[in-house]
Image 1 (cartoon, rainbow, N blue to C red):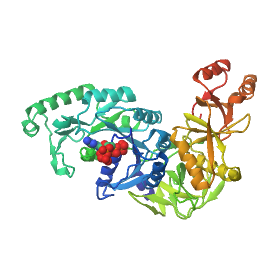
Image 2 (cartoon, rainbow, N blue to C red; image 1 turned 135 degrees about the horizontal axis):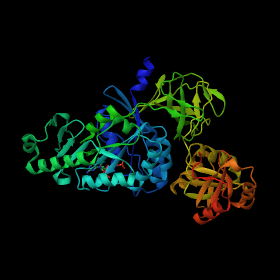
Image 3 (cartoon, rainbow, N blue to C red; image 1 turned 30 degrees about the horizontal axis):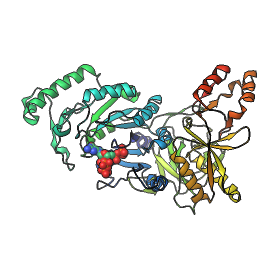
Image 4 (cartoon, rainbow, N blue to C red; image 1 turned 120 degrees about the vertical axis):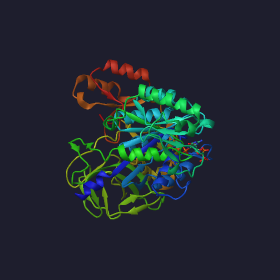
Length: 528
Ligand code: G4P
């Protein structure tokens, strides 16, 4: 069936990295290969520039860019590639975690000089938990950096991965001569010219051939032979199935800025990266090639125009075909909705589409029906799992600063929480509202947006909370549970789903509480 052919040619992935490793540059070069953009500099960075005059003004600017770059789609070699954009700033890590629920694989970019950095560790951990297939791209080989073997060790140790290099650098920095492509068995010579094209690839079927010495010089040829011998000795053979299972991670070296090693990465990617993968719902496993449409919301984006409070809900299509103007069941609300202008995303623009396939992302205009994690189907009642909230790291009371605008304030808070900007907790004791965020920046964002989009004003008040711990309701009938609720009432709150949360004020008090009430299970994400 033709729709299965369409689904099978889709590759939906995310590029993740610590800020500044080269994610934007690599994205741009991939789009150039796909012919989706014509010149470098067309992809705007979604990162918060250092030293920006005002952080939240910068964030507002970013929100504009971020709609445009949410999904970058292009065709390459008969494959439809969807790159899902992920914010690099650590305060928006939760956005990235959610986007990772919608990708079928990832490419991790690592700076050869800086090695594995903090943000990369966190993001890769989430990928590992979900067994997402990972390809690693070691970037900036035109600069002095760490020794390739040391770096591969570091990747294995810090990221808990099992790597297999599919290319290997010949020198680095000033002495960088090029890359031996283990996957294709050829050499790519580095000329430092970003207009470089494929013709400069030299096939080397026999590494012992004196031709190699002629091309890269005796010394480099000897070192390369030794290095490749070591590679074969240390690392396993590449096994596609192991990669797809998330147990083996191929590594490429290159320089995104110089467009070097990027085509090799892309060619390998289209050959090995997974087509849309099945997804677990609470009820059953859903396969992409099922003929009925299902999908879930992984991101909500408020429009920039404060006069039109409409939002764009990003839906990952998990199975079947999504059609315009067709009624679909919004499972949580139990009602059918029709979408007259669903958006599909291309490199730099979005367009209304009549039909999209599993693997694709559609943007649906929404006037407040959707929350992150919502499921859409043709009628079957299923609920997709896997868009959990993590415990926030910052907590503050939110107060209404303009009593005449309390309705606007609550509506604003409600909608911003649905978008996943932050999490709201309501204290059991007195109904006070607490906002929890991953980064301090979000408080400015919320204050600014409440004022500019909803005409409401708020102030914050500090609150000493170490962690939000979701309380498993399994034991809720037991005496111990009842005592816990009585004694700890001051620290208990409900989240937006009405789940009970224990707001521990220190690691010590959490530990003491766990010891005192051993039958109660505490969870550190909202999904368990
Ligand atoms: P990010 O999205 O991961 O945050 O990184 P981005 O692509 O913006 O790259 C960060 C910086 O690293 C940029 O320089 C970029 O030009 C540079 N860069 C990317 N790839 C390479 C590479 O292969 N070699 C070298 N030498 N540099 C690379 P910048 O000065 O911060 O920004 P810009 O002013 O050049 O845009």
